Length: 196
Image 1 (cartoon, rainbow, N blue to C red):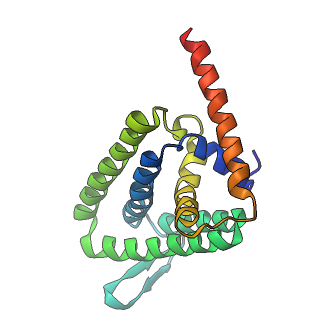
Image 2: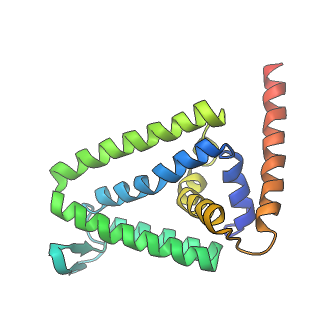
């Protein structure tokens, strides 16, 4: 699978997220997982010395692992699709800034508890979505890195398509849906052989 092949990545992820209730659950919980991870990563050491920026409202931005993660995600999304990717990169940047503000205000002793609670709730919701509604294990069990990297962008593209009819290019949605249907059919055939 090509690193920036949006159709193939979207079809892979979409084949694990085809049920509307499961998609909705992911729309609610994927970005909070990313955000709260950034809250925790705020407390990682700076990448280089003197890499702190003091903003208004007592916010201190630290160029650390959280910043690096937001940059990698943002660049990857722009590489996948320029328009939606720019929006995804902006959301990653806003998550980094706002999570930094929250983490700085809370301090580590409170922040890790908030992160733990949010992560447990969000992951539990997603596993319920897969077990109860999708009736298929999550994508992260088959491709951990791809699932973590694509999840926020998948949710963003789903929202843009659902609410605004956005397509990266004409025919994208139909092409991806055909690939999703083929992957689901192949998975069902494998399950049938496994069970017989």
